[in-house]
Amino acid sequence: MTFGDSINTCFSKYADFKGRASRSEYWWWVLFTFLASIAISMVSHNVSGFFSLATLLPSLAVGARRLHDTDRSGWLQLLWMVPVIGWILLIVWLAQEGKESSRYASLEPATGPD
Image 1 (cartoon, rainbow, N blue to C red):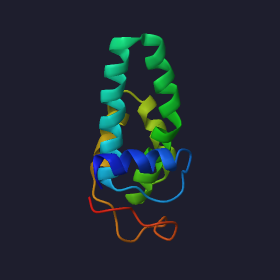
Image 2: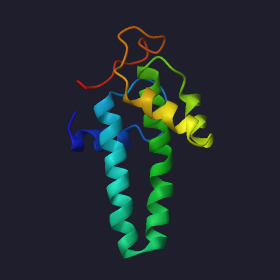
Image 3: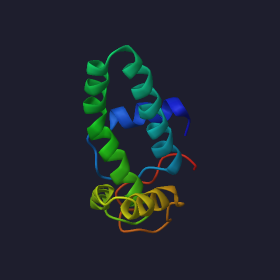
Image 4: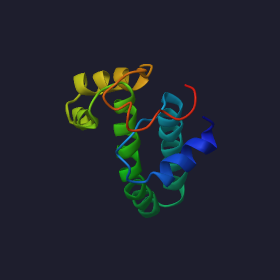
């Protein structure tokens, strides 16, 4: 999945927490939100805050779909609230290769190759 495809997919599945997301879809989205936040904050902090709020729901949705691809519950994103250990665990899980068979496999296959 390309950078543009990933952004289009994440915005089109704005609040879709079902299904799966490939590694490339997730990490391209993370890069997009990070770079856009930095660029927008150079212009205006108020607009940057609005952008962060506007992309919060799709970020949570793509994170849940990414965890589904590794056969984990999307609720595990709550580990972001546990400093250091939770962050490390989530980064490792989000970077892992998706599993062919998972309890979420019947919902929707991950889009595109990793």
